[in-house]
Amino acid sequence: MWIPRRSSVVLLILALLAVPARSATLTILAPASAQPGLKALAADYTAKTGSVVTVGGGSRANVLAALKAGPADVVVLPTNDLITINTVSGMTPLGTIAVGVGVKAGSKVPDVSTPEKFRATLLRARGVAFADPAAGTSAGQMIANMLSLPDFRAVKRVPVQGLAVTALADGRADIALQLAPELANDKAVALAGPVPDMYEAAVDFSVGIAAVTGNAVAARDFITFITDPANAKLWQANGLIPLFH
Figure 1 (cartoon, rainbow, N blue to C red):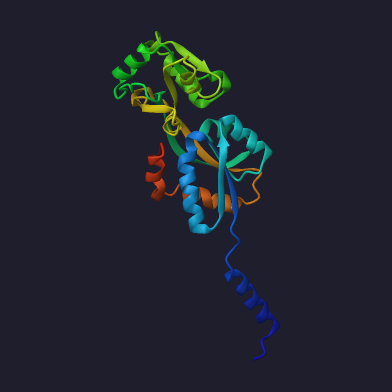
Figure 2 (cartoon, rainbow, N blue to C red):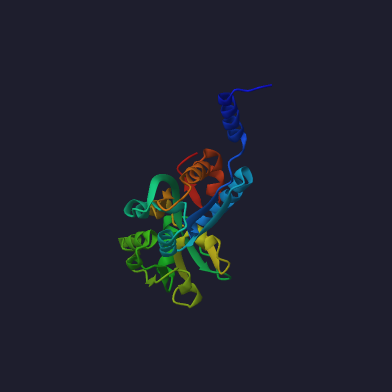
């Protein structure tokens, strides 16, 4: 049967639309505290879409350096960081990650379940380690502010360049205050629990699209997926309290 040329073009377009789009390759940058939830969701996203998703980064400094060097598609950072840098767009709030209390694995794990017990634990410690706020980390500054409260004036503070847990390993401190998922995923550390809520020791996190991405559509689709209320429980199980539920 003869088909007019215009009809042939229409059929060709319809045929092309019917072919599944080639799976994207996405690079996600995030600090260690947000990576457990992201890696679990990345695996789910790959199973659903066929897209290859890699999660990298590590420290805040590493994330910022990797974002500058590229490649990068999606970036997760403390909200204050995303607000101040100009290399990420379309910021979407994720949730909060609490500061946790860690001790060296094998040592007695203190009870920090109430404000009174938490204060007593810090006052008894020969050293309480936390990230030096001079390094510019959101958690380090927050912890320094908390320790400046009258409740904690007698606490022996140990600011650390890098991760607070390094001071547990070398004996400078017997308590480390650091974002809870980082402590929970460190085999050399026992997590006693989060800092009690009354001290509001938690960091807000958000996600955005890297300006250097070559696949903004897929990046936005991934962000939509990880902020789906259906994934709220997975985030919570990995230490982030989501704003969506």
